Amino acid sequence: MSLHEVVLCASGESESGNGAHGAGCITLHDIVTGSPLASFKQSSPGVHCTAAVETRGALGGLLLAAQPDKPILNVYSFQKDQLHLRVILPEKLSCVALDHQGTYCAGGTHAGRIYLWEIASGILFNSVEAHYRRINVLRFTRDGVSLISASEDSGVSVWSISRLLDIDTQHEAPTPICTFTDHTLPVTDVICGSLSSTRILTASMDNSCKLWDLTTRMLLTTFLFPHPITVLALDPSERVFFAASKDGSIHQVNLFRRRKDKLGHRLVGGMEAVGGAGAGDAERIEKEEEAEKERLISVGQPVTSLAISLTSSTLIVGTSTGQVNLYDIASHQLLRTFIQPQQSGLAITHVGSMLKPADLIGHIRLNDSPAAGGDKDSAPPIRPITAFQRVRDMKVHANHEVTMMLPIQYSNGDDKNHFGIPPVPTPESIAADHRYFVQPPMSSTSSAAGTNGSANISASAPALQSRVAELEAEVAQLRSQLGEAKGINDAMWDAVVNKVMSQPQVQPPPAAGPPSEAAREDEEMANVSGGALRTGAEGEAEEAGGLQGGGDEDQGRKARKKSKKVTIVTRS
Image 1: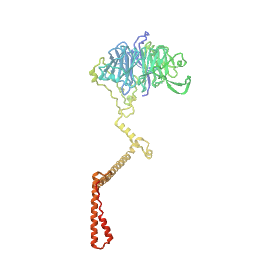
Image 2: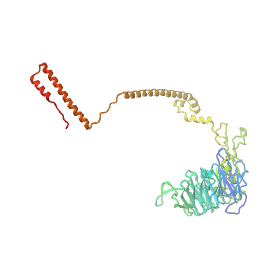
Image 3: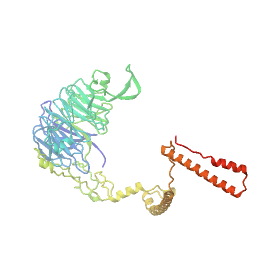
Image 4: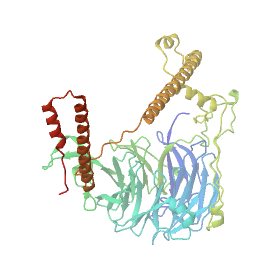
């Protein structure tokens, strides 16, 4: 199925009181020709009272429209032009919003209360007294983490979805994450950026638009206009935004500009972001300036809604007289205008751009005619939705069951079904993808032998098995060698330890020092006894020599003199 862009329009009674009355409707138009593709009647939603969920994930899309004069929410499916479900609300809603996944629905009231429901189960998760006056607009962030509310009390509040859903805090009054109070008059519109920084653009009746950073919760820049701003449209890449007023003027504000020197001359190359200096920074937009005239689109009628096409090349404008104008963003040239004759005089309260639903009534292309064995009733199922609770029930909240529609599985082997939805992966396809990524690079010879991927995989299977066997044998050999080396190392270690332990230990010599008194006495006694022993021995030797009769007289005399020398040591 080829992708085709369509324009979603909702019409209702104008809030400005132009005197037009009648039943509005929601229509889908071809963005190229402007011809109507489908119409959903019995609804006259007001401004910010229309929300849509596109067809995705093998589930059909939904349209929600809150009625301005009664507490009723009309639900439509793209597969039929009749009303799919009528939901009775606790009170009349002034605005409605859906998250991008189609899981939660938020509604704001004229009294400043916010309701949060789950679409699949209809459970009312929370009811918050958020503002003092009417809530004009509700927006979910792109990731669905936060809900932003803007009111006529000039306040903008940011709410955490997880806190609103927490059952443990249901008996406590929820508090917002942060509140922006720099506006002085009612806030008319809020736009959330699509990038990860999550910047918020707010418009107010005080002739200003403010750019906020949700991450740092700080004001980045203030843009001042000559008239009150009622509607905003932000480029998905956050390069430019459009601000419209009730006098029919649409201002194009670029968020980036060329750098200038101190004298105001443009520098060659280089871009810089506009503003960013905080609360004291203000960019004034004046009609009289020549540059502003080039970026001004004059519609000639009060503008009630704005949107940018999916390609970011076309600006879609809805007016209070029921016209839908398409302008080229680059040249500001009016491309085409379309309007339903029976809706003349009703205001266009909502415009948006989306892909043509695959299950749109009267335009379902199954690409499987009866001749090919197709089934005309094989449209994707409608997204589950039930009647919303009007009173909180804690028991149901604690034990609720969520209805989920599993995606359709096709076993015909085609890459895509007739809705352009890829089939559910099978174990065989997952295994094939795994083999593709984990197989080793093939040699030049094997790659030259065949270029077909499946043929190469089947041909290399025996080689892979043999290679695996070789690697396993090598691992076993290395393990055995490692065991032998470990045994040798242990034996050497044991031998060295035993040898060291068997050797006698040598006592170290005592440290040298002065001898004690007892040691000196022992040494003196040893010297005395030693001298006496030596004298006795010499006398015996002399007597032995005399008996032999062979000694000289002088030598005998000397020996007798020596024997008489006795050293006597006395204690001092």
